[in-house]
Length: 366
Image (cartoon, rainbow, N blue to C red):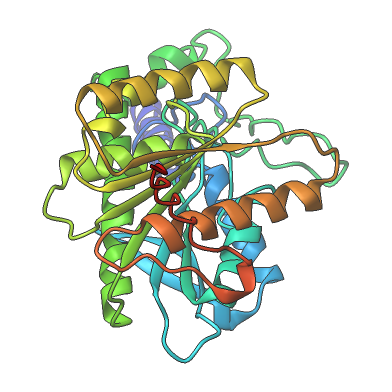
């Protein structure tokens, strides 16, 4: 009898152990241990695209404000950009003036670009105003990665990790750093471009946009193409003509020219050496601008650049409308009088007259 009782007790104990193991299914081989110790697999941060450049945001604002007929989406390489097109208001256009704004300026910058692009068509010129990329060094930072927070419970507080019913107080679970099987990435961060590399990339981007604008102008059957740069846009135009001698552009107009920060050479070493006809418009009341203009003029004389013409602009008026009207008149005057590859023109409405030849010397009486 005792042996039979012992056998039954042993059998009952074995059945109980088998039932207990059946309640806890084994973990599958493909399951990875939770990486954050909360009982849930760690989620990867959500990667977000970098912010748009400020110039792109400005271009989007222009697209919403200006008529669709003025907007041209050009492509420089694989990079689209906005250009503003205004056809000439005459039957026989003189050509195309490509307007290149300065740093921080838009394709419709009100102080200089907008009046030129809207008023030159009245005197026979198509205009094409470009959008340039942000200055080198002003790239927007990438958006921070978003890590999803823990799911909230019905009460509004983050849900706590579930507690295991079979947890053994004598054998606590390993800490999160030990439980995680995901190893941190050992890939090095991509190297940041140097200042020189950023300047080189900027030069290539702007040159590609000017080249795309010239291609568009040629599609309009333009007989004459003029590059007109304002501020640092004048330096970019001169730099493009220096680097692209076969561009086919024979005329350059610079308005309030300046060198973009961090770039070289200075304009007195760049513009006077160009084979193109150059109109150099500057504000003579500004001491720094006048001194820089004098250096450019002296450099043009040293290389005997006969088609380098400086035109002073007066900054005496407090009226912005008067300044814009003066700028348009001066640019128009240079285009009418000094354009290379075309006969000088004197519009009848300007009131300009040919200089009176000196009188012949009187014959001395005998």
